[in-house]
Image 1 (tube, rainbow, N blue to C red):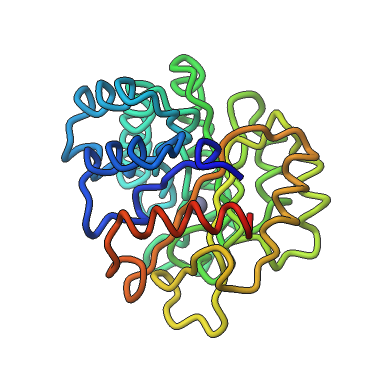
Image 2 (tube, rainbow, N blue to C red; image 1 turned 180 degrees about the horizontal axis):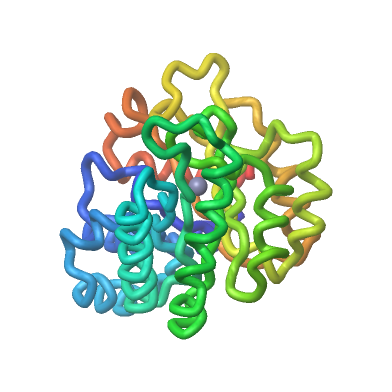
Length: 273
Ligand code: ZN
């Protein structure tokens, strides 16, 4: 795969580069897209970021992230909804193809995962009209079940598809190989999602052993995920967007020179994606 088909999720180099440096780095390496995180977007300024992104001809494959809907109190849930509306506006301002939703885990003190899932559904429903009006699709990202407690109680593509069924137009899926590669129902879930719902495709690799639940993701080719096989399924379902590289790697890739990380990404995309 050529670099123009890749998108850089800014988390991959976030320890060393600002958003401006990420944008300029993508342009320098011929990478076609970018997916900023909101804190880096805020540090740059939304208008300035939009100007830089357009000026460098980059596609924005997503804004990371909205979500985190469940809360212990009605006030907490309301604040989450307000914050998601702001995230939708930011996504629209930078022309993002979607707002990625990491939907949230259990509210503090709760053991009610079914209740948390209902809060997620209600939270998305509460911001959906705003998202539709802004023309920003909401991309539910199923997260690996090890995050069900604290980050996302939506853990499979089947669950995400069911939410899409329930909520209707304007909601789709961000498929990240790191979270879903293990799922025996993945091929069926991708086929069912289809072109309409597949809003983003994220890649990295699952290292064996994995040393940290959050910050030990691998570069494509260094782990056990058959990324090419999943990409083939996604493309057979009609996805023709960019392939977003998203690597949280505190002890390895975050320590490297970002230009070298981008060169490695491009190299691995040619052979392992
Ligand atoms: Zn992701």
